[in-house]
Length: 107
Length: 309
Image 1 (cartoon, chains in turn green, orange):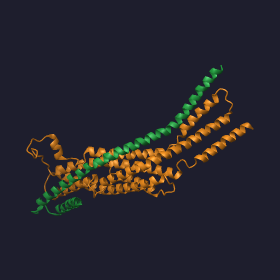
Image 2 (cartoon, one colour):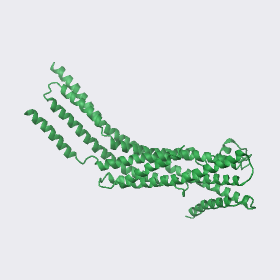
Image 3 (cartoon, one colour):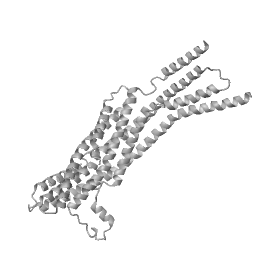
Image 4 (cartoon, each protein chain N blue to C red):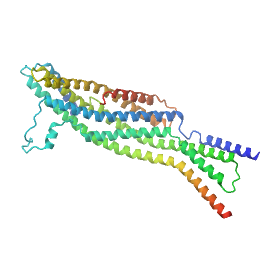
């Protein structure tokens, strides 16, 4: 909880320092300090976001693994449905063969 | 008379079979819901995928300009005093600001699965196998007609052909419903997990992809303003500063709009996903959430197009 509060403060700090830098004339003696502080805070925030993005990768990979399995299961189920028409055709072929055998037997 | 009785028997048999299997398949409301959800899932998946790749490219372009404005100088050595190499300098420049291609690929793979799932739902709701069944029934009746010693008339055989088609369709519909009853509840929690991940990446207040883009544009805008407040520099330098500011401003407004629309659509997916799980069991459930998801997805597609270069 404490980390979340500190983290949130970093975003606010970057925002405030950015506004302060923009509002301060470049001739102000404190301007270089403000620039340094803004850059340091902005770099720290970029690193924190980078880490959070990398951390999320694990969750995306875990999702992709589970979802791939589910998609495969759906494809298998679909192929079972497609087998119905094939099975009717196979029965038709069988009837043809039986017919030919019967003709030979009768002859 | 015998022929008429046989035809009547076939008709009654088909009717009885239809009544017996009635309700086994999906109702119109369920088909509509699944179809609409599937199409919207495809749209959201495609829009998200575009955003991931475009977002990274935009960050690289902004970082290039920002580093030029800051007159970035690479250190001669590594911080520990050892000799610097290309890999060290690559990390020092950090052109993609942490949006590594590997991060993007993992996200693209995840949303690809959302697209595939949407496709499958559309396929399941639209395909009737009618063509395949008609062709199979034709082969079947041809075989019956040619069977040696066949005593059935053409009408009887045609009746049997119709029976094969009707019962085949019913079987397919019933199978589809069984398949969906198993699939949807198992995919529902996965989609909720994907919604959590996408929300993290698309929410400006959370540390994800959009927050990264926003931070980079803020830095670029601040550097551009800094340079423009100072006198001097060549015409080219001033132009770089102005172009940098303009790019940052465009990205800021696009990011804010797109983030809002993506979040709205992801929230709609979350609701529609819950409804879909219920719809497969109970076709009386209102399709409002699914329709709202579809409307948001359509709006999103229109909104994100200008951002995609």
